[in-house]
Length: 547
Image 1: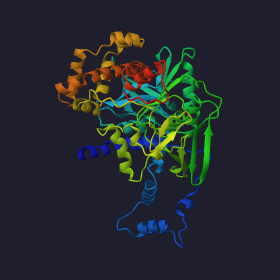
Image 2 (image 1 turned 60 degrees about the vertical axis):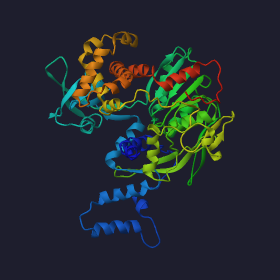
Image 3 (image 1 turned 90 degrees about the vertical axis):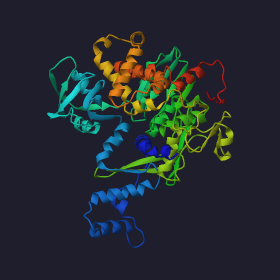
């Protein structure tokens, strides 16, 4: 048990990123404290204890103290004890915190990984400067601004720091390309690179569409509309909206998305806080999919804005929420920017679903316990029972259609699809922890890029790409070369998952997300359950099902 609990420290950075960086609501209609004097000029009786302590430390402490570090550290300490999502962001980090919400960043426009101590282009971003210059998937960046970056221990952070920069500025890169011994030099004019929040939109079956959204940014609703309009509207009878792993973002984006599915004048969400009165938001007559069958997929990583959408649809008896209980972030943050480029994100209100549920989980036991609860959902402790006896009466709410829904932290799905643990082994864990399947799939694609370029669609992909015994033996040898010993019993248990993941990642290398998701979803338990549910001729929207 102690060993399992210690594993939380491996997950904390990821979970903190999910909840703080991605799940932020930045208010547009509230005014926060204005100015540094108000932040540190708190009038406590006849003296200012905060300033007095800071000055005392600066003047009398035994060793020299950096004033800026001391002030920033005190801000972090003050905010972390309020709630898990109020935070101070130093100037060096503010840009990276805001980029996912703003929907763009400045750079050269490539997706890359560090493979064998070399920056390898996974793919140029469509419409970006690198694609326009002819930089290709598989290219190795060996120099940046004349500095050798291959084989010298460069990290992802190092590469990002050198390749990103203000739009309109130049960066010189030297590239090694398979099939030629010559080094190719490029001068790349940095530009605005979009961060897409809609990963993919396609038809799962003739009449069932699928759209996956990875965040709620300033551009999300426009991207969703474009994605939805790309589907054959005349055939579209059902829709799977995938919000799994979506950490949230802008409140306005979630309201616009929920409006797409709800009839006119239905409450979507309301916010309320000590200094901010009850503020409800309602649906309009707009929206292109108000009547078709709808399934929304959620899981432990769906937070904040994702929970607003799921809660609004569930409380209005619209569609079916399916998957696993969501993260449970029901706190609204507002961002206040300082002149030095830093910022404070302060919780100013809570949000509530139409039936009155606050989705925020308890954080009374501290930050570690708060995130450990989410970690447990991935572990052997499993998921809570859907048996109604589990829930206190105070946590039960009833929708207008008579369906019982539950508060107490996160959105509880109408249809619970338990995590599929079949095929898990220590061998699989080791190769996944080191990213070996991803590396092997990329290496396979890179070595066979000329032949694979003749594959034009997934039908041809399925005919040509076979993860057979020979390829699996090559993978085992590859894993062994990277320090993972051969484990035949473990390999046998996990073989079908390894085969699946190799094929999925080769498809991604060839077709991007339009290869990744169609191949992945063929065996995705949540997606398959959603298809089955939509295709049922008759079903009660109030019934729970636990496959």
